Length: 117
Image 1 (cartoon, rainbow, N blue to C red):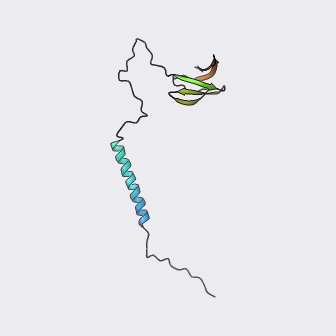
Image 2 (cartoon, one colour):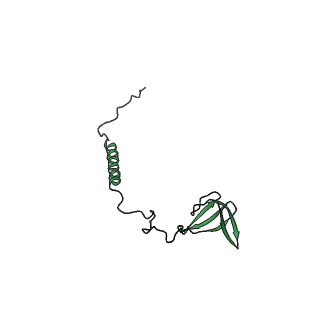
Image 3 (cartoon, rainbow, N blue to C red):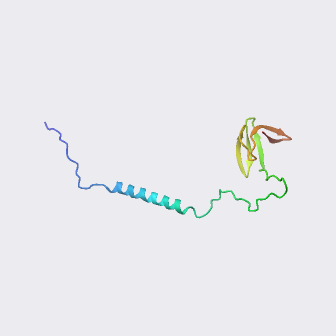
């Protein structure tokens, strides 16, 4: 009867390259992110809103232009609103682009209107 004895694992080829590569990759990522933070983006993102340089209202007491949006459809509690070419789902209590809160939907002359507070 033979007895199994543990055999030593050959250590001729030590694989220490993988941890070194991971460390080098982390250092390179940290260096790249710190350089990007210091230098910053080269151009302004298109998502940043442009401000009119004149900035002055044309008449005395003139209010800024109210954003135009349109209610397409409503099922009572929520509705579809089109604003700047995008369609949004609007629920009761949501804040609209004109700064008011939605408190209801009303259908007049075949068109949906927002009842705001």
